[in-house]
Length: 476
Image (cartoon, rainbow, N blue to C red; front, top):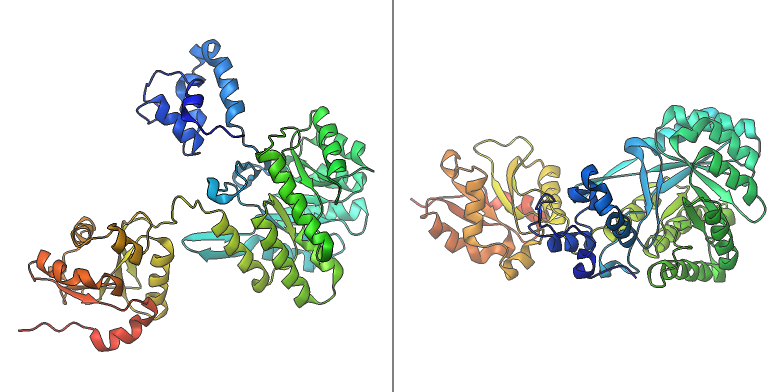
């Protein structure tokens, strides 16, 4: 089981309380390591060449203790390098999930060159802005359906000419995989896959080209474990496990159970010889239907299911928005730290092209709230200022109830943002409807020189509110 006591981890640290890591004590640093808020490399004494002999044993021990329960595998190189696996918990609420599973969308060596290039460019350029982050497709899976090494090599070459995203090279034929590796090995692709029939040849490829490899033994965990132990004994540790992804029926239930068993073996049972990230293949939904709508639907359902059940990486097909976007959003939310709400930087933001006559709105820095308000203002072409008050990422209603937002904090936030209401034509700002009870106290804090308006509780109603309440009317 993963170490959860700072006191037990403390014994591996220098115990000097030097502060070079940014913490006041080594005990505080140990707590940060357990929470994955700090990295061992920040403990500079452990890595000091002059103290190498003194701390070498401690460094080795602490690295072993801190190693994630599910092994961390790197695919790709440079800025595009991806982390696969590296998880420590069975369930998200126990701490958090760390490395979201990369989505690899497929192309095949049977595609017409023009269609191939078009699809690769679609995969490469797919982006969606969601709650302050750009969600992207991370990988391209190059599948051999012809079984021809030359055609596969040409396909891999054309893919590499049109994207720098990491690759998965897919074939059970070692000759085909070798043809692709001769072109792509420097990019450190993941190869798929070794099985009971080709494992010797594929293991040699993984060793020769120094690339991670997927082990495939559908619906046979004993066979999968045997493969993993064999590859580990050969010195190959960059492994991904494929236990099989059934598209429907009773086998789908077996797939789910196998994913759960593999995560439990790694996290709860500590099986370090069998603790590798697991691959799911929602693409399999297309092998049972010719209906593109049905195929895209079931693929999306499978992806969502296995994101929740611990898949470390996925191979997919449908690029339709109704298939991609739900799973992108789900993945984002599942891999968001439940201990720390998604936030935007507190401060004053411009929406459109505001001037001294434009309204000034207020909200919290909870990302979902902020971007909802910003979108409602921007989409209705309401040029305005929007102040995000620091509530530690808590929404309006909860922060009002919990005291994270108060009249004095609102006043201080406007001051820190440099807002001078005397320089506006209206000398006012607009509270969210759920902050209505602050309006009187705020006007008192401003000496009644600033008018505090109460907006709607739902920012979608701002356009209608503006028609009747803006600009504000001052009593003579």
